[in-house]
Image (cartoon, rainbow, N blue to C red; front, side):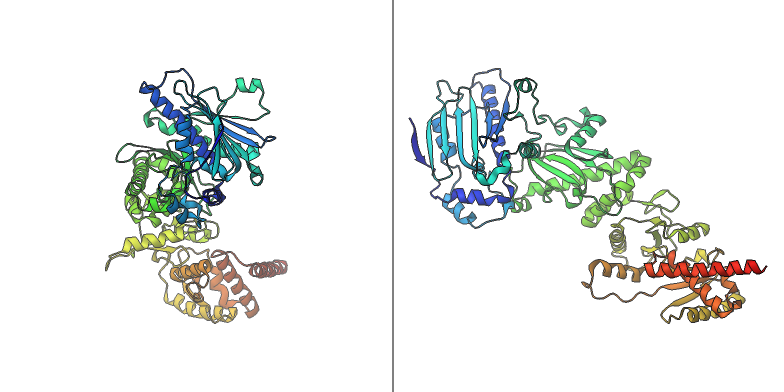
Length: 618
């Protein structure tokens, strides 16, 4: 006999709140319903193990049916089911305490991140975010139990009567609302199942009216019930790790290496973290850490659980100790969460050390891909830097890799570096010819990283040699200079005067030095401090005030024959050659603007014309 009842939440406002609350995350309803189905199956299996339910040979499964024409979506399980008393208890008397306080607390909230669904036994009611009417057909495992049919249109009333289900379990049928038509799209439902249910512990099958009988006989579950993280690391092969990586992430490249997490105490944590191959040196590519609770997807990149710098990795982590609906405030104040975060950081540093010490050549091969992640980690977490500082590598202009301890610094503690091997090729050649070294720091994160290393390396140092980084075009090392004669010193004064007059630039600083490399007419230098201020100003605008105008220094090479011949040239040709020497120095220093490049080409043509005329006269 059909009868009506009232849902006991002491308020008629519960459904409007549910509909509004997770508006931006409506699709979460499917996760909640499938999770409930998994729970029902799990309880049934426990009852069988305890001997409180008949030991029926039946494979546990969840079936999801979509009927676009009928505008329905249903989730069906073969779990323990419910009788009428249990439907009244678990469905109509929403299982949370203090309903009025709940209504008062959440009625004006719009922040979906707080996640009320699930916290108060409301998982089932998330269906009303997308449905006008919800029906339940259920049959309990108990002997002589009668099937039950329950329905509600989203108001505070419901109808309950004898149902028509003939097999143990529960079916939740959603009549999709007019404004939620997207959830009648087969591709959308498959996308949601892949996102939320990819690794749920029981097989899930998806059906549409177009499914034929043949399809049903050959059907395959849409989920993987035994994800790799559940296996012991010793039982997993390299091929399995790589295959699982591609199953989880849309990445055409294989991962470099991985860390298999398997912790039982003081908290439960299983998972696999992959080090992906970085495809772009100009930026740090974002990663993805998927967080699960007993194989049920929770969210991506929860920084309270996973340290922020590890977000550059890709991976999966299953932590049953965390609630399905993660509250930021809960995580920030949970001691176990802090332990999990520290443990993950330690495991990552341990893995890096083991690869470095066991196979340094392989580690060097990985370095350009993992360096951005490690450097970002050092900047974000000083304790991580302390763990990995001994294995930080620097690629040199000679193509080898050295740690900070292995690298030979200048007498004043300076490490020269290169940001662009093409633009700074002339400086690299001069360094090599002088027997000097420099490291290559050409990633966007490197400018922040070297400032961090300088700060940490010199912290607390009141005296002695200070560690500092200087770009290869910021200074000329003593090893690159030759001893100048009295004659060259007189020529130096004359050349400085000639250049300042020829360039007509009072701001230009000109020096003349005897360099060991004779074939380079001049180099352009910019002090490291001024260049960093210039970069900071370009990055942050006027946030730190206007950066002072930078002053470059043009260093003429007294050993170069062209420079030596300048005083003998007639004035017009001298100006032309001076300007060309300046342009050549600038090209090796930075990219010329369109206007500067146009002038350089024009002067090159003029010089070629002078050379051609001279050859013609001969």
